[in-house]
Image (cartoon, rainbow, N blue to C red):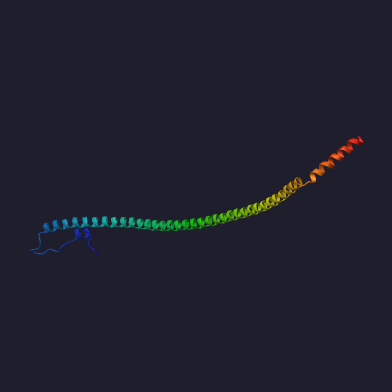
Length: 167
């Protein structure tokens, strides 16, 4: 067990003939007591400071652990958000591709229908031209034939017959 300042203060030395000067020993012991008390106070202050610093260190270690966990959670959340964003982008792209395919398909169907309609109209126009040409040719042939003169004579004869009959 270490000496305390009281132990040093209460220490009694035996007396001998030709021993040390009692006043010098007492003065020295008084000085040792003061220094020893100062060292004990300083040691106690240092222990308190160590305890305080250890508490601070524990607080900072706890804070560091919390921050590390927070950073990990933030990183995981960021990765999750990136993954979700990628998935959503892929869904949007697939939907857009589907819509684009649908639009292209509808446009191709309309173009085919228009082409078929146009082809049908061209056929009908060709038939109409052929019939019209045939009609015009037959009319020309009729005009060029001598039948008009006999038709005119027949018409005049009928008109005269009607006029004579008084009708």
